[in-house]
Structures are given as C-alpha cells and as structure tokens.
Amino acid sequence: MLKLYGNERNRADMKCNLAMGGNTMADLQEMADQLARLYAENPKVEGVLLGGSVSRGWQDKYSDIELLVFWKEPPTDTYRKTPIMKSNGTVLDFHPYEDEEWSETYLTNGVKLEISNFLTAAIQRFITKTVDFFDTDPEIQCIAAAVNYGKALEGHELITEMKGRVQNYPDGLRKTMIEENIIFGSRWSNREALLYRKDWLMLYKVMADAETKIMSILFALNRQYIVHPGFKWQRNALDGMSVKPENIIKRMESVFIGNPKDAIRTLEAVIQEVFDLIAQELPDMDLSEAMKQTHQVRPLNENY
Image (cartoon, rainbow, N blue to C red; front, side, top):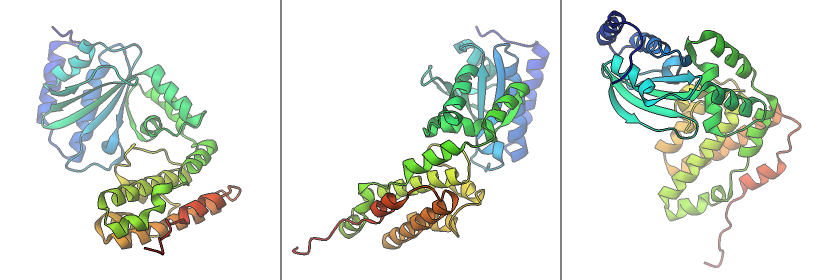
C-alpha cells in the first residue's frame, strides 16, 4: 500500500479542487500549483519547477503540465506514485531510472501530466556542464532552459539560487554553439541533386537538418538556451528573439509547406543572412571556411 503524506481531509480537499478544474490556461496554472503541493508533502522533495509551454505562456488546447521535481535522494516507486493516487491520476507511463532521470506520465481530470524527477545534485551538475564547461548537448541545455524560464512552485530558495547560475548566458557557450553549427555538412551540398532526382524523403531531412542548425545558431546569437531538443515551439521561440533574419518565422515555415525548389532558395538566403548576423555579433570569428563549404553544390556530370 502507498504511504500517504498529509491528513485525510487535506487529501480529500485536494481531490475536490483538482476535480473542479477545467482545461483553460488559468486552470492549468492552478492545477500545477496544487500538484506541486502534493509533491512537496514528501520531505525528500527539495523543489518543484513548472516547465514547458505553461510556464512561458505558450500553452494551447493541446498543452499538458510539465513538472520537474528535485529530490535530495533517489525517489522510490512509492514516493512517485503517491501524488498520482492522491490526485486520482491514471498512469500512462512509468519509467525506471535512466539518464539520471525518473519519469512518469499520467492523466488527472483529462489533463496530461509529464513528471521529470531528478536528484537536486544532478540538476546542479547539468547546470555546471552548461554554464561552466559550455556543453552544447541539447538534452542537458534544456535543463538550464527549464530552470531559467520555468516557474518555481516549491523550494523557492533553491530554485532562485539555480536561476542565478543560469541567468547570464555565457560567452563561451555562445561561441561554441555557433562553431558547432556553422558547418552544414556534405548532405547540404547535395541539395540540387536531391531536388533533381525528386528524392523527397532525403531532401526534406537535409532541409530539416539545415533548419536545426539555423535554430541552434539563432538561440546562441540571442543568448538563449535551447528550450527543447527537437526545437518544439519554433514559432514562439523565434518570436522572442531580437537578433534574426527579417520575416524569419514565415520563411522557416514556408520551407516545409511550399515548393521544394523555392524552399532550397529560401534556406540558402537565410543561411547567408545568419552568417551576416554572426559577423556583426562576433566580428573576430573566422567564417571563411564555413561559408565556402556551405555554398558548395555537388557538381554536374557534363558528359551525361
């Protein structure tokens, strides 16, 4: 049997409040607050952070609630399941420890909850990798983003200290991010051949990879941590940037919904404009080799 924290009346009140909630934006915020209090009843929990779209005001009718729970020691299955039971939740996924995380997904009152459990020490280590050692791994950088942009629900003193560590985007991370993404690779040089052959699957993968590199560079130019490893919420992220090519949102979207030939030309133009922005922001960075490789196109066989 699960060990419960708090008295019976408190648990009943919490269940009633959760059941009364709807799915409006304000309801998601309120539900997140209530669920955070459930987690905080466990003395092993040191903090609860609201992440994802709800924390940034980007939520829509498909949004769920993403909570990061910080533990002083590894959570048992019982500890993880207790808030689910208290909120009358239905478990969708319940994963064992992997990559320094315990994660579960459940439904409460028709709203999906995605819970990421970490040791507090692991979060501090991820932050160190990002801000002190300039680790560009998007999975790790997303933790820094969640801390920076997220909303503290419990453990305010701890999370405030964490936020202080990630508040200033490091110059070293900015430079490393750009250097790792300015080479668009040999597949990009095959774009005309793929278009000619109508190899759509590979062509669109190449274009998606190009957009991924563009996004990585733009996050760095704007001193913003990558918020999702797959660049979810691209439109919202671009809208919040000040250093970017003109009309970038529509141009990036048109790559996947317009004519493929036009899409390639759009990407070529955007890439050049991104190089221009890099030159303005980091004038000491040598871009000559990167630009040379990016402009290369697989040569035609004139004898064919």
